Amino acid sequence: MGNPIAEFNKKINGTPAAVIGVGVSNMPLIRFLVERGAKVTAHDKRTAEQMGDTYAELEALGVKTVLGDGYLNKIGDDIKIIFKTPGVRYDAPAILEAMERGAELTSEMELFFELCPCDIIAVTGSDGKTTTTSLINDMLTRGGYKCYLGGNIGRPLIEDVESIKPNDKAVVELSSFQLHTMKRSPHIAVVTNVTPNHLDWHTDFDEYVDAKRAVFKFQKPSDRAVFNYDNDVTRGFAQECGNGVCFSRRELLNDGYCLSGEMIVLRRGGETEREILNINDIYIPGMHNVENYMAAIAAVDGLVGDDVIRATARGFTGVPHRIEFVRELGGVKYYNDSIASSPARTTAGLNSFKQKVVLIAGGYDKKIPFDDFGPVVAEHVKKLVLCGFTADKIEKAVKNAENSGGLPIYKTVDFKKAVETAKEISEPGDVVILSPACASFDMFKNFEERGNRFKEIVNEL
Image (cartoon, rainbow, N blue to C red; front, side, top):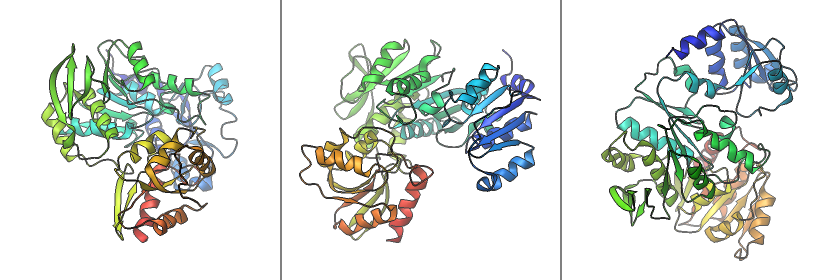
């Protein structure tokens, strides 16, 4: 077998390449390509002035640029390979035209999959993928492996690819945007669940489901795929996949990872093969995190011992922006759950608390219906503060819920005012949680910026 990196270096040297979108993942990619002699043209919707230091670096690297509103109107006739950012669809007219001329379409993550010399463990799903990815990374690291964490979290891994050794492990979180054009699958694939999401970007739910399918679609028989038995879509995936294993917190499976009382167990042939982890030893709260642990355990089983899994359960304190405790003020506890960018994620967060909470929700509209979310809010929320593009839609769904019971709803157009309103209406003993059920793009670059701003405001109260 040849050396993929050496082969790519030979292929890309002197080759005209277009990079569509100069963002967090693609700037390291551009450096990687330039270092190997590629003739790079960078396309970005921002102007040179808006890009600031990034534009100055592109100039220093000798990269051509196509910027501003028309950045995607035309891709040069000489371009042989296109690296697109996940947020740009593969069927943009300029990309399709370039492909008709013979250009190859790929991405930073697809290139990493092509060049990575070690096993790749990839996690996708509508909810829980960040925590599950982080758990897998923690378990493998505690088990003695050198791990590289990336994809949708961590750092772009293409800049590490030449340092990675065959016995290392790459642990990546993958979004549907990243998976949409993938033609390779990881050695171990995990799908936490699939529920309607990103319907503002995907043409319909079927396309979204098919994008998720790519995480296991190209696996070899010796690879492993892990699926949530409790989710209709992922249970269907397991039936498609000949090498799949399931986990469930609702069913006592004949074969797979599930709950027996308060113990996560592995069962085979209808019998418990071994007891792995008592859920009371899990530091982070919520039954959704029990599911995340089962998914992670199924991924790493055979790579680390149960003692390592138990050590992770005791020591893993969660990921930033996922039910992250911020402070207690005047007897009120404030939590940052900014990562909850869908109704299902916010539902999981609300289920983590035994009491009704003061909820701050709303944001960018991903065209996800809120009909089923309304009754959940009515059941778990004491007072509701709404802001962002979806405020009216969420308000309507809550008021239409049969159990709404006149839930107090406060609306504001200003994010800071929403947090201040939550403080004003809360009482000692209350929990205030930012769990938007929506993306952040109406006001912020991403959920991290939104969560950090929330923490700043709370700490200034």
